[in-house]
Length: 204
Image (tube, rainbow, N blue to C red):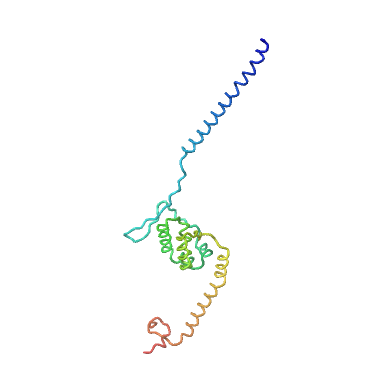
C-alpha cells in the first residue's frame, strides 16, 4: 500500500502544476497586452508641419515672404517652359517681382506650399480659362492636378517652340525692321518727326 501511495504522489503533483502554469501564462499575456496598449496611447501623435505662410503689408500693398520660407523654387524658368510653355518662362525672366507676388498671394489664399503655388501660377499664366475651370471642378470634389509634374508631351512641344518657332519669329521681325529702315514708305504720323524716321515724307 505504501508503494502504491508513493507512486501516485508524483502524478498528483504534475496534475496540480498544469493549472498553475496556465494561470501564469495568461497573466503574462494579459500584462504584455496591457503594456502594449498603454504604450501606444502614450506615444505623441504625428503632427503635420506648419507651412510658412506669407503676410500682406497694408502699407506697401505687397505680400511679404515668411522668415521660414527659404524662397527656393521647385524648378527654374526653363522648368516653367518645359511644363507650361513660353508664357510663364517669359514672365519669370522679364517680371520676376510680379511673378513672386503672384506665388506668395496664391500661397496665402490657398494655404499651400511654395512648390504647389509655383505650379498653379505657371498653369494659370499658360491657360487661364482651363486653370479656372479646373479649380471650379476641384471645389466640386474633383482631384487636384499636380502642376509641378513634367509632362513629356508638353516638354516636347516646348522644345519645338524653342528650337524652331522662336528663331523663325526673330528672323521675321528682324527682316521687317530692316525693310522698314531701308524703304520706310510714306510716313503715317507726325509722331516720328524729330526721330529721323521717314522725315522726308512728312509734309511741311
